[in-house]
Length: 350
Image (tube, rainbow, N blue to C red; front, side, top):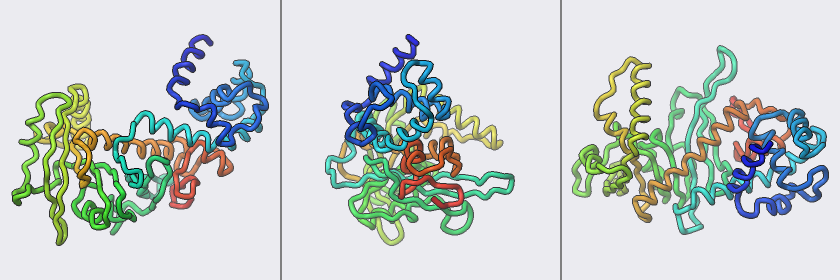
């Protein structure tokens, strides 16, 4: 119990400022019936949400810890009412830890885009690809599309995403195609994507094709930044952008090399020396002109938020098999996995 109390103090110190007042403002608490404080309420909810205990096991453990003596039905009602409180906590934690430096202009919409593959249960289950967009800083999904994994229009591409002017689209290397970047640029928006160096073709201002590896080799120190102005040639149009890179730490490089070696061993392939050398760097491309190189690379880290969404989809939601029976308690666990706030099932319905 002493260790548990110490752990809770550490966890509570990481919560956003005013988190207890949020419980009252959000409607999660109007009366502390059955709970001595909002602190105890959150601890009980986290037993269910973070530890994965059932509602019945949660109330038993809470009673043994002398926190509260309520029924599982009463806890379910508390969970439903805490949906907005939990959402606000997530938003504030993101703001405090990421420390938004991406855009000083609050009018700009920042969206993280990614895709994932899901499979229906059973040996003959179909595969589906989900294209998903989550908006910062609200962490609310503003678009998703479910398609088969084969056939025309089913690949990873920004062309499938509705884009508005002045938006900033963050995406991983799977979306680093000139056609997709051009699609976003033509609609008055900007992109920030991880570069796939094996397929990325860029040119200098004078029209020469850019040789990437010699430039990266100038980054000899851990954490050293580099930036180069480049031009991409699309279908009938050319547009300028910035290629930004940073050298990884020695530990990160070793991990990247081990991943490549496992992949090559599994697929019975030989990893080229150039691939191992590219793995020493984080390389991104952006059409955004403002911000330093460090700011651009720091901004790209926010893309990890969409990976957490997919983790919730596949672990908590179990691709449509969420262990809840109503919308409010489902959203309190899964949080806005589709634009309507409901949870997305494997066959594309919500």
